[in-house]
Image (cartoon, rainbow, N blue to C red):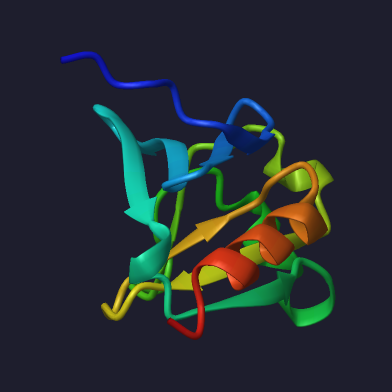
Length: 113
């Protein structure tokens, strides 16, 4: 039985939003993390300026045991991140190239269900 390819709403090389969920590439050392939209409780924008400016240098992993950053070597050039609450203490934190587009997709398809 073959599965039809998922319709992609957003893709930038690190982040993919398709019709079923979010894929965060380079999340683990061994690969990607897949989050179904129904698992997303909330999405919050985190500015990488001011007091949070040091966070833009977190290339991969966690510095506070709350936010987990996927590997993104371009993060130091970005100004905002998205923190995804999936109901666990550690929250995936991503820096898509177009955070507004990803935030709209995740909010519309994920939260409030």
